[in-house]
Amino acid sequence: MQRIFNKIEYKQRRQELRNNMTEPENRLWSILSNNQLGVKFRRQHGIGHYIVDFYCPELKLIIEVDGESHFSEDAQAYDKIRDAYMLGLGLTAIRYNNHDVMHNIEAIYQ
Image: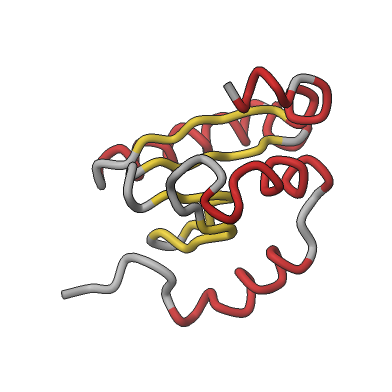
């Protein structure tokens, strides 16, 4: 069986992303970490050849925090392919943009 989660070849990249999280990612992680929502989230988790911002195995839920680079036409097409891959694995992806995380975190929390 092929390994899907946290492939070894992406370990260093996952560590780099965890060590260099953006301010919006840090802000959201402050809510998601330590089972504060009653479920465990992992940050910078590998799924296939992708690395997602946050993943909850129990809920099969991915949360992505999108910066300005995600607003280009090419990036949106890439995100659609990525989201379709996740959906094919039975995972649900939710996307929030940086602005909402920084200025409307309470709504995201709810």
